[in-house]
Length: 240
Image 1 (cartoon, rainbow, N blue to C red):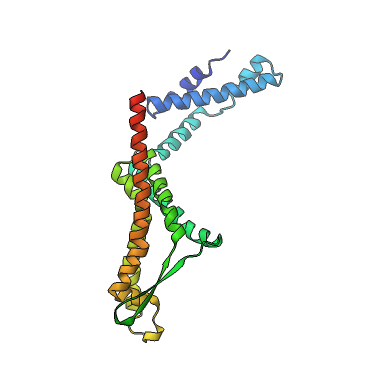
Image 2: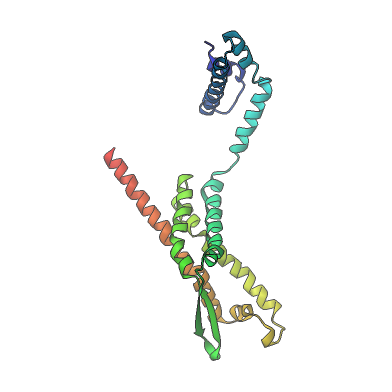
């Protein structure tokens, strides 16, 4: 019986991934060779012929070693901040944004809130009630992804509330720009962006509806996840 693990260690002796990763690669490849050898024997191939076929299956061992080294190094180029903060944050943002059109297609249309501001100006704000009710679960998702990647508590919280932060940045950039573009237009030709950007009451409503309310819902989910995770960890320590 061939010692495939010994063979792999000899042929891939130049692999430099650290002791643990080297052992993982060696064991995985040795297992693959053992399975291939056993499949040949099951097909009726004699032992020596099956051994020979299995030994030549890899082909160029030096080339394989270089490919494994490059692939593993490429996997390890992801920084901790990327896996602990940016990827969970982008996942949270993507899910929260996809939910809006998905809910509308399912018939959960937004509600419209009419508020009268200074000088008799009426402001119309869109409230996505069902979306807001689901955002705590999105916040918990972002917190879970960050926590699973080993993120710190600030990174976990930011990952959970990231959609609200992203919307706030967009408002900071878009509203003043739209107000500047429409400044010279007639009043009747101006869009809602102008009143929202130029009136303090309008800006406050936008921030409340698209930043503060979603941010609070997302934070509730992230905080709930942290609380539950801490309680489960405490129980695990107590039982252990």
